[in-house]
Amino acid sequence: MSLSRLALPILRGFPAETAHTLTLAALKTGLALPDLDPASWNTSLRLPRSGLTLANPIGLAAGFDKNAEVAANLARFGFGWLECGTVTPRPQKGNPKPRLFRLKQDRAVINRLGFNNAGLSVFLDNLRRQKHHLAIPVGANVGANKDSVDFISDYETGLTAALPLADYLTLNISSPNTPGLRGLQADSRLDTLLARCHAAWAATGIVKPVFLKVAPDLSTQDVDQIALSLIPHAGWLSGLIVSNTTVTRPIGLAAAGRAESGGLSGAPLMTLSTRILRLFAEALEGRFDLVGCGGISSGRDAYAKIRAGASAVQLYTALAYQGPDLVATLNSDLAMLLRADGFTSLEEAVGSDLR
Image 1 (spheres, one colour):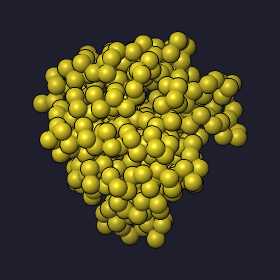
Image 2 (cartoon, rainbow, N blue to C red; image 1 turned 180 degrees about the vertical axis):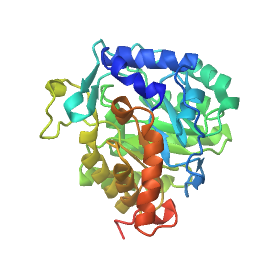
Image 3 (spheres, one colour; image 1 turned 135 degrees about the horizontal axis):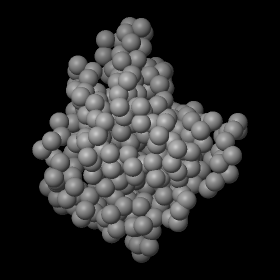
Image 4 (cartoon, rainbow, N blue to C red; image 1 turned 30 degrees about the vertical axis):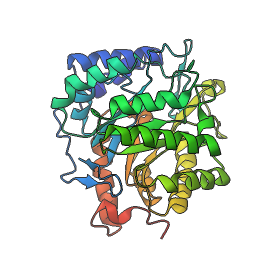
């Protein structure tokens, strides 16, 4: 058992956001870091549409390392890829505290952080300082400032500035904690966002993958409409990350904190996010890389995302409950499940439930 796992009971004694701040501080100093090979799966994985090569399919979702402060040390926990952010063009304090709540009985978290971050300049300086220490892909998740008069302009700014340094970009238009942001997923606003971001991407002259992160709180009709907007952009947009947190509260939540407002993540999100992932896989028919995110806490969860259409997965909340040793466990269990079903590679299993 790693020292980082032994620290979990101590960290849980602090309020959730304090525990997160202490964890970042410990990672900055190099305390309790394991000595793991990032390529712990003994193979590499190439996402077919983006061409992104991952050391293994288990990625860290955005939200943990908002300012790209500890990416090099996070890579030592065995992730195949990392996503830092969400970062906004200007520094932002986020919403008033308390704004992060553990739902221990449900293995879940509710957050209404509101894109708190130090801004694009600090983010890029941090990433630049660590870049030569990183042997795995690191992406930049970009968002909009809450008080921006033009959300889309903020995405253009973030994309243009981060694309030269990050290995891929994610446009986060699905956080529930910035009023009006999720409206960018709707019809004409999504068309405008994609057109303007395509122009910004092309103007850089840098061909790197760009992903769109969507919400789980979508109807079948919403998914179909988003898919129709995406298909004309298959030449430059690489894929979708499905999904962000949910504003719904599934029946059966036991923790008293379930009434808090904000986005719910963790185990209760697994069923909803996987359903939306499957709908996108059916609607898009292999035109984009799909990343499964939301509710993963076991190898079986990761495998379910892959069988539903994901080429790789991301997690975050489960780390707060199970510790970073979970990454190696997921890789090991996923390999075992693939072999048990007769697959010789992960790629063979992608979307197998749809077939």
